[in-house]
Structure formats: C-alpha cells, structure tokens
Image (tube, rainbow, N blue to C red; front, side):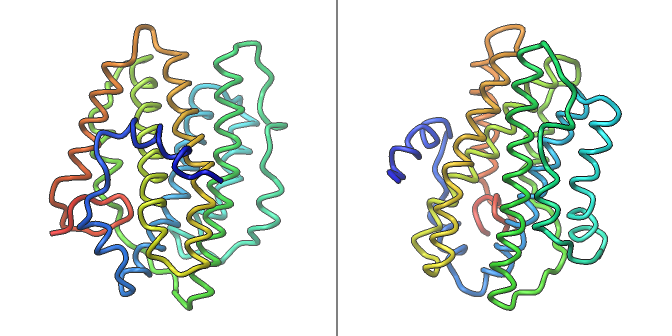
Length: 252
C-alpha cells in the first residue's frame, strides 16, 4: 500500500500536524497502556456516533432497537464493568439488512457508510483489546479527553445545521485518527506497527464519507464551516493539554 498517497489528502484536510511533543510522549513504553486503552474506547465512541446519526435521522423503531443491540455488549464491557463479550459472534450480527428501505439518496448513503463504519470500528475495538491482552495490559476505565467535546461545543443548535456540523466534526475526528496512526506507527513494535498501518485505509475513507454526507445534505456551501472546524480542531491539537490521550493536545 502506498501510505503517502493515502495520507496526502488527510494531511491537506487537517490544519496542522500532530506536534512532535505528543509523538515523543506517545512513543514512551510506559504510556502504551494508556494509549491503547483510550484508542479502544475511541473506536467504540466512533461506532456510537455513527449509530446515533442513523437512529436520529433514518432508522425506524425496529432498526433503532437493533442498532442499540449491536453496541450494548461493548458498552456494558467498557463503561459498566460487564463481562467481556464474544466479539466474533457479535461482529456477525452487524449488517444493513435490518435498516429500513428508503428512496432518499442521502438517507441511503448515510445507512451504507455508517453501518460499514460501525462494523469496522467495533472490529478495531476488538483488535485493540486483543493487542492489550497480548501485552498483559488490563482494561481500566479512564476519563475522556477534551477533544471531541471541544469540537461539539461549537455545533449549531438548529437543524439541518446541527447535522451538517456533526458530520464535519466526524470528518475531522476520523482524519486526525488516521494522521496519528501514521505518525505513531514507526515507533511501535512490529505487530502494533502493522496493525496501526492497517487502519489507515478505513480511517481515511471514514473522513471522506462524513465530508461527502455533509456536502450532500447542506442547504448551502459547507466550505466555511469546514474551515471553521479545522481551526477549532487545530487549536485543540496544538494548545497545552493537561491530560494525555490519543487525541490530546500539546503535553504539559
């Protein structure tokens, strides 16, 4: 795979690169347990975001219930000290067949892209969990970073502008994840490096899917909002941050 060709549009989309100080801290072996733990939870939160979009804007009652069922075992494990689920069996349940049929092109695009995103992000959750187990890293709950909240704070509060802004935020979160996987990969052990590089293609596609959905639904040109959130995102990445997380800012 030509990683540079894959990463070029991601880096062009983002308004800044990850600071060298973050990479320096992230590559320290003692920070690997925290980094993997937060990465695992970020994968679940990405799936939750996609699920909420489908439930709010497209799904009927039965489809909505099915979506909740897909994520419930992961949420119980991650947030409520539930048992570790059978990830392989859970993964086989996820598919578009439970979603309602629609003649609206945007609704169908949302279903197609977000169901695939949910399936991939939950698979990544399981893969990170396996990486932790292989390194004898126990799962311990941690607090969330300021990153996603910092962007969502700027989301407008009336539709369809709320939806447009949420989709743009989703694009930046996925793009930053892709950029950080690539930035961190050279400093990881061979197995983790291979895993992180394997994530680049899906993360790059996810950011493009979110952006395409925003442009398709927007009542007017979205470029100004894309630039606005690019500045918000870059400020969160480059300003001092007291907590170290996968999407945290400049370590203090």
